[in-house]
Amino acid sequence: METKYIFLDVDGTLVNFMGEIPESAVCALKKAQANGHKVMLATGRQKSQIHKFLFEKIDFDGMVASSGAYIEYGGKVIFESRPSREKLSEMIDFFDKYKIPYFLQSTDRLIALRWCYDRIYAHFESEGAGKVTLDSVFGNTEIVEDPKALECVEKAAYYYSPLSIEEVRAELGDYYYVVSYSLGSGQSLYHGEITFDGVNKAVGIEKFMTAVGAPMKNSIAVGDSGNDLEMIKAAGVGVCMGNGSDDVKAAADIVTTHINDDGIYNAFVKLGLI
Image 1 (cartoon, helix red, strand yellow):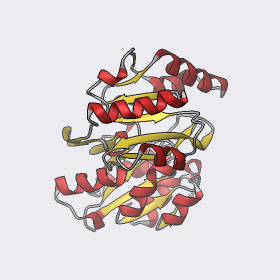
Image 2 (image 1 turned 90 degrees about the vertical axis):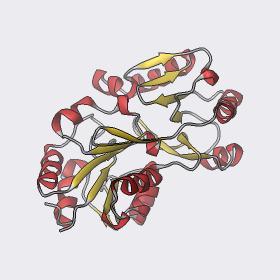
Image 3 (image 1 turned 90 degrees about the horizontal axis):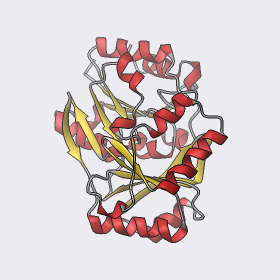
Image 4 (image 1 turned 60 degrees about the vertical axis):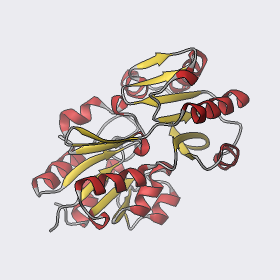
């Protein structure tokens, strides 16, 4: 079997909403690597926000982080995407106009205004998030007063918008790639994440495969929610978790079992990876 390049979403795919990775998933990833396949993360989280225990359990071959805005392979950075200061300012003006709390993501930290941080943190606490979850969500966070001056931003995540995802897309324009975002208990049309200049997980995978000299037909994407939809469609094989959203299930070539019901392991068996 030719080498396959497997791109795995984190939240809801590798890690459940209790902050745990099933042991069957760890077993599947290690067996796939032993069989000569490459295993990558493909996450909306920035590099510093990825659960540290994942790297303790799996020696990942690479990552597509910040929804495609940051790509690593073999420990080397092969792509980074950042908006111009003008485009960053336009987005921040939009958030300010509607009083939408938001985070900005860079490779090594989250960045926020104080009031944004406090409101988002309070939401997670109200949902009963424990220290492990809070640490994984917020991690290294910098509080700033002038986010428009930043030059390190890869992506944004926003919460409690009075506008739907479609309305946000319409007002911001095509330069900004806006998808729904899962916050705590589930998906919402009023929480979103934004990348820039057409970048998304699918673009990240395409750039990754080009950099390593492998055809897209050898890529496998596994995910569960809105920001996985494009990579599910673009990959050689798209896999949706049994706990995934209906639109991702409809786009996938394979729907596996729930994350807590050996979803990753069962998918790898079905695909002949293990």
